[in-house]
Image (cartoon, rainbow, N blue to C red; front, top):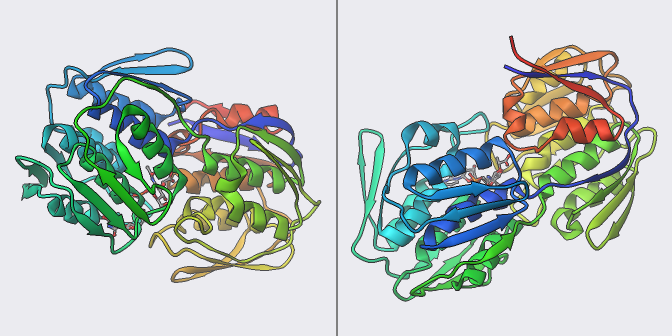
Length: 418
Ligand code: EPZ
C-alpha cells in the first residue's frame, strides 16, 4: 500500500487550482443513467471514487469514453439493473446509483452499502423515501430489491437533511407521474449542481439548494454536456494546509460562497482573506489563533472540513473546541495526531484541542478520506519526517494532492507500498 513521506517545515506559497467536485461528480455520473443517450461531463476529478462509479456504469451496460478533460457516457443500452456487491462495499455512495436506475427502469437490486470509518451511515431515509414514491422494497439475505409499476410523485419530509437521500429522491422522481415535494431537504451546493445538470437535460426541478425542492415528472431527457462545479472541500483543505505553514496562496477555480463558514473561521484564526469571483487569496500569520468550530448541515461549517481544520488548530495559540454534529465517529484520526504530539481530549461529540508549539514527525495511518487529509496537514509542519500509510483513502477524494502541495513548496512524495 502506498504512503506519503513528508519532510515538515516548508512554508507553502504560490498559486494552485481546485479540481472538480467529488461529491457533485458522483450523483451527476449517476444521473447519466436517466438519459437513454449520450452525456458529456467536464471537470470530473480523476480519483478512485469517480473511477469506481464509471466501473459500475460499464457493468450496467453503459459505454464510457474518457479523454483528458471529458467523460462521455452512452446509456442507451443498459442491460443490468443491479449494483455489484463488491463495488457497493468499496464505496458507500454508490447507493446514489440505485435512485437513478429506479428512476429509469422502476427496478433495482443492491446490497447494503459498506458503513465506513466515520459511522454506521444507514440508508433508512433513502428506503423510506422510495416507499413514499410507491416503490416496493424487499430485503433478502443482505440484498435490497426495489420494484414498482410506476413511480408516483409524493410529498416527502426528511427526518434529517440527508445529502444522499435528497439526491436519491431527485434521481428517482425525474420521470415520476406527478409532482414530488421534498421538505427538510439537504441544501448542499452539490445538490444544486445535480439539479442544474438534470434541468439542462430537460428535467423539471425547482428549489434545489434550499430545504424545499419540487420535482415535476417529465417524459424524456436529452443529450447535453455539463461542467462539474469546483470541489469546495478540496478548496478548504488546500487553504488550511497553506495556513498551518504560515503561508500564502492564490487559489483558483473556487466558489467563495460555497466555503464561507471556513473562510470566516480562517479569518478568526488571523488569516487575511480576499475573495474574487472564482479565486480566494489567503495570507496566514506566523502562528494561528485558536477558534471553536461546530459542524452543521449546509450552510453551516461542513463536517468534511472538521478533521483538516482541527488538525490545523493543533499548533494554534490557545485552546479550541470542536463539535462534530453530523457523524458519530469522525475523530479516529485524532489518535494519530496525538502520536505527533497534538494535545487533544475527546468527550463524546466534543474535542478539546490545546495548541502546541511543535508537532513531531512519525509514522501515522490514514483511517478515512478526510482523516488522512488531516494527517497530511499536520505532516506539513511537523518537525522531521512524517510517513502516512493507507493513503488510498486520501487518493479517493483528492486529485493529485501531493503534486499540488509540491507546487506550493511542500516536500512530499509518494512511497510505493511493499
Ligand atoms: C454526503 O454523504 C457526502 N458524500 C459526505 O462526504 C458528507 O460528509 C455528507 O454528505 C454530509 O455532508 C457524498 O456526497 C458522496 P448524509 P451522505 O446522508 O449522503 C445520517 C466525504 O468525505 N443518515 O447527509 O452519506 C448519516 O448516518 C464524504 O467526501 C441516516 O441516519 O451523508 C449521517 O450521520 C464523507 N439515514 C448523517 O445522516 C440515512 O438514510 C448525514 O448523512 C442517511 C443518512
